Length: 102
Image 1 (cartoon, rainbow, N blue to C red):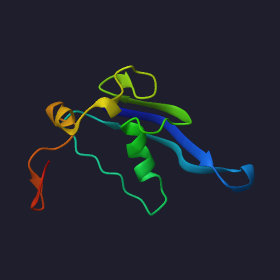
Image 2 (cartoon, rainbow, N blue to C red):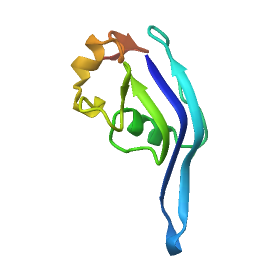
Image 3 (cartoon, rainbow, N blue to C red):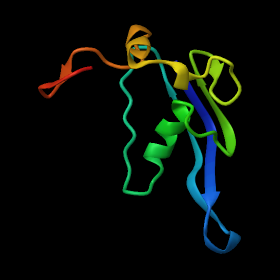
Image 4 (spheres, rainbow, N blue to C red):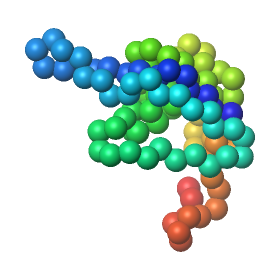
């Protein structure tokens, strides 16, 4: 299961300002569910996925994967290989629209 709660991610902007990439996003993704992130360019979709994989740490809020806090766990998801994610059923196996997995 994946749970995001009150995620917020800011980055440094010009003139010491902060750019808000993600603002107060939360969602559950239960085992076996297929979830999509939809939104216009610049809406924060890629930033949310990067936080999910542990490549960026949210400025505020919490994201848990299989009960582990992505920001603080010693077993951060970024250490997981695609095969591990598939084994734990966090990535699909098979193909979509004729595109092979792997």
